[in-house]
Image (cartoon, rainbow, N blue to C red; front, side, top):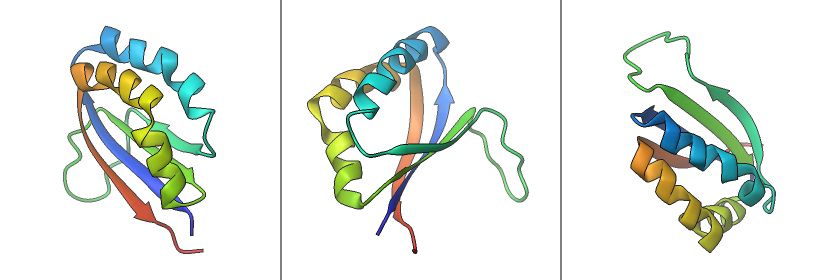
Length: 96
């Protein structure tokens, strides 16, 4: 069952976030993930969405998503995101 990684991000240091982005593909490409959407100005249909960036990625399964997220290379890179932004991140198993 495929797994979706969904991140709601509020960036407060764009330069530091750019450092994160500069290394992202090198780490992400080692795993079987696919970036489905990145949007800095979502269209709000209901409620509030106070985030400056929304990211949706798909992995073949939850195990592969966690392998990427927990990898030493990603954790080292994620320090830049943690310094540059606050995030809400979830994994959702998708129905086939």
